[in-house]
Amino acid sequence: MPHIDTVIRSRRVVTPEGVAPAAVAVRAGRITTVTAYDRPLPARTQVDLGEVALLPGAIDLDAAVQAPGRTLREGYTETSAAAARAGVTTVVAAAAPASPPVTDVAALTVHLAAAAESAVNVAFLGGITASSTPADLADLRAAGVVAFHCSLSDGAGAGTRPLDDHRLRKAMVELAAMEVPLLVHAEDAAELAPPAGPGNVALLAARPPRAERRGLERVISAARMAGTRAHISPFTAAECAAVLAGARAIGVAVSAQTCPHYLCLPAEQVPDDSASHACHPPLRAGTNREALWRVLLERGDCAITSVGSGHRPGTGVSGISWTLPALWTAARRRGCDLADIARWTATAAADLVGMRHRGRLAPDCDADLVAFDPDARQAVPPDDPGPYAGRTLTGRVERTWVAGRPVYVRAGAAGGRRPAAEDSPVAAP
Image (cartoon, rainbow, N blue to C red; front, top):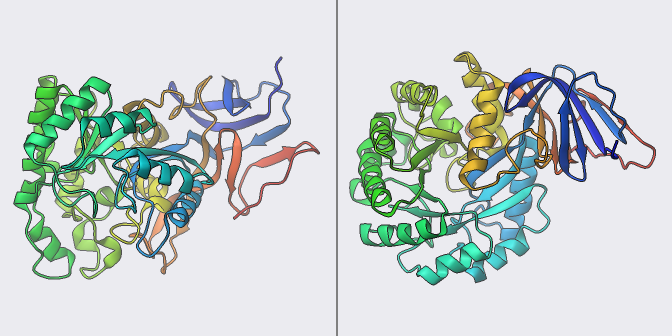
């Protein structure tokens, strides 16, 4: 038998076949086998999680990393550390808001250097602006971006202006030739208005659902013409789901991502003047939240394929720290299981951006793993900067591994770890 670095056992391992007791063997950063829970497997390190579940690490699409007043390196350090604590093993960083925005190879090089010491995997979206050329897009793809992003309004922040229909179609033609997806913030600028006040009520009036509908129609029209795979990020207006479904029914490659705060926090239940709940698009009413869940839970060809944090530190919701517990708290009440969570947060995102070796717990995949206690309850500190401050959530991240290497162990985490003498101890943040 080849040498095994680590064996992780759990009574609830989430694999592509379902949730079952299993032992996962890891060697050189990759999963070598998934086998029976009680099968003897000699390894340097044995971890038995018991009833704590083992999931593929989350892949967070379109997460901004840089808060106002922080350097880019600080942004990557802080965001990746929060991601590790949250069970996110790959951050697919938004092109903007950031300084500089990732709109050319020179900017991407700056981001690569800033992210070099991140605690988790980091991949990048390339930003498309009105001035982007086909050469810019080709160079960014060759330099390693996994997908591209554009906005039809102000969704990408400073540095990336909204695209008109001509430039959107032109960009889509280029991306179709490269067989790479385009993520789109689809609120249409012509349907937005300046808020009449500082609160969420004013924001809702200024950014109505029809802005998403009009933007979706533009994206679908361009994608149908160009043959590009388009992914709406974020999708919030449940009334527009029929537009997505209709497009998919005629063969348009369009899908969507939503975020836990849109699934968990109806506008009626948050303080109107809370800056930690101000996001674009805004939080919508409870009826919209329930309708969004109905769309997400549709069996068969569901248009909403992924759930990401929508993390925008300083300029929106700071949500990456609580993605899994918040989503699980709401999903569990609706009869969902851990396989649903893994599909929404890991597998679908990996498939979208071509990370076939991530997002699933199977042989030959990267050992990017999270130990998640689905039964634990935890109180979010009242001074937390995110939208869940003061709330009690169900589910807690106990451990996170990236390429088989422990990057986070919660103090007092469940599950024994029996290292060999030559192993170094893992610090618990």
